[in-house]
Structures are given as structure tokens and as C-alpha cells.
Length: 323
Image (cartoon, rainbow, N blue to C red):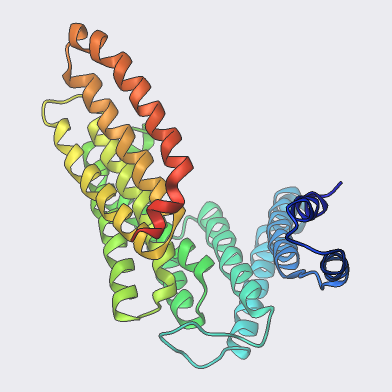
């Protein structure tokens, strides 16, 4: 028995529904149109992933037989053709949300940017055109993707641009040996991550307030919030004498995201605020308390925090409605 039948049975038992009304509801449920929008978009995005992956496999398997020049030329033609299609189907620029009648334009732009990354990576690997100037190799796609995201109103490409910009900032700030040794606990990277995350958050809030591509705010806040909190937690976990100071941006960020989540009715941002704040406060308590005090207080804290988590998931809708 499907959930609708169970619900209708319950309503009938409470005399809230007549047989005629039940029949009308069941007929409507059987005959109502089903939206394929999400399914088709998912299939198209899957097609983009498979297409770009296939191009990569084609290059890898045929480097020796086809030749580097031919493969680079093929990639360049595909990239240029995709960008040309996006340009031909463009609509006038607007600071608001733009609806493009050419439904494949969004996917063509995503393919174009992905192919550009493949082309740039292949050229760098084969001819080292950028040499060891890795910052230049990351800032070029960042500028291109951010321009395309704003010009053609594409949040997926915006995410790619912000990610490329973060890579450029990390490479520019951190010494090369830090990246080569995978030393992501370096204080320069940590502080840079916190500042970059704060910058993304500020841009997102500013764009929403000034109505400049306000629908981009979600992407800025999601990426910026995670970078900000992860950077602050990494600083807190360094176990230095000054590491406890990173609890301040964690608490401040949690308060800001909780306030924004209640205003925008967003469970995701509310969850981010609670989870990151809980991790930071719990770690700080573990580090600052002595063993005797923690042996007494820890059990109460574990039970109390567990109860608070259960209460949160049972009442988060009320928290969002009370804004």
C-alpha cells in the first residue's frame, strides 16, 4: 500500500474525507503530470561528465598514435566551438537572474569551461608553456570562469571560478615547498583560507543586499563558509599557545550563519553553523580542561550535547520559522 492510501485511510477513519473526495484525490494523483525537469537536467550533467571523461581517456589512449599536436588542435576546436555556441545564444546582460530560451546554452558553457581546463592542463604538461609560474596557470581560468559566470549567469561556472581563484591565492601565498610536501597545516595557508572565506561571505552578502546577482549569494556563502570554518578549525587544531584565538572567528561565523539561515529559511546554513560551532567549542573544552575536571564534566557534556543534537533535529523548523 502506498503512502497516499495510508494517509487517505487515516483521514477517512477520522471522518475528514468522504468516499467521493477520496476518489477525486486518487484520480488526480493517477492523472497528474510528472515533471521530468530534474531528471533531464541530471542526465545532461551526467552527459557532460561522461563526455569530458571520454575526451580525457581518448587523449590518454591515443597520445602515441594521434600525436600531441592533433589532440591539442582537437581540444582547441571543441573548446572554441562550444564557446562560440554560447556566444551565439547569449541574452542581454542583467544584474538579476537571466532566463535563456536556448536550453542547452548552460550545458554548453559548462562543457566549454571543462574543455578549457583539459586544454590548458594538456598544453602545460606537454610544452610547459607556463613553466613554474603555476599562479598564472590558475589565475587564467579563474578570470575566464568568473567573467563567463557573470556574463552568462551560470552558478556552476561561478563555483569553478571561485575554486580556481582559491587555488591561485593558495599558490601565491604559500611557499612551493609547502605545497610539494602537502603541509596544509602551514599557518600561511590557514590564515589565507580564513580571509578568503570571509571575503567570499562578504561578497555573497553584499551581492544579495545590493541586488547584484543576488542569486549568486548561495554559492558564495556555501563555498566561502566551508573554506572559512575549515581554515579556522585547522588553526584551532594546531595546538599552539595562540591557537585558541581561532575560536573567535568560529563563534562569530556560526552566529552570522545562524542569523542568515533564519532569515533565508535555510536548513543547510543552519546546519553549517551548528556543526562547525559545536566542533570548535568541543575541541576547545577538551584542550583547556585538565583531566580530573574533564572526567567529571565530560560525561555531562556528552549527554547534554547529544540531547541538544536530538532537540535540534526535532525543532529546527521552529528555529527557522521564528526569524
